[in-house]
Length: 117
Length: 111
Image (tube, rainbow over all chains, first blue to last red; front, top):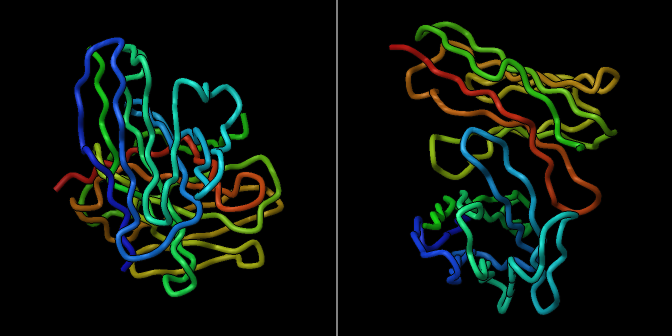
């Protein structure tokens, strides 16, 4: 079945630095991917919609200059957390919709743990 | 917030017992989905129920949907220790494939 892969699975970075998280659809093309954020023992909150070949659409309250999203190809979206702070530490999950061959199901990646120290 | 509410927040049962989780949402929907999340991992899609369906089964899972009450329930029968996870309901957010997730139920199945 369709698989969505995220990399890295976990990352530790220093305050003030930037970190990039990749989301790849492995066996299907995804014109749209979604980025969610999840704090421990809480639910997932949608951050933004990543559109291939165009600008991302951000949810209310999400800083687009802090969370840079680039959807450079039909199989890759990246989320860059710029000038990271400890409060950005969280679990980041992406999702992508499989094509009609995959039953139009939405698949989620395994998530990426970000710890900012 | 449009986030749905789930109850209970946490549930601990003995292996073999049934587990029931409830989800309430706020807006009209055309479908509702249930997902499972093992600790620190991604989400696994369990089942989708459409607004014109009242009940749906998949293996040991039974989902109901009451659009008049804006609520859904997930029943796991004959639970196993491996069912220990968090369970989330999700409804469409606006148009397209964005999702609004419920607050989740953390299920612990004791062997």
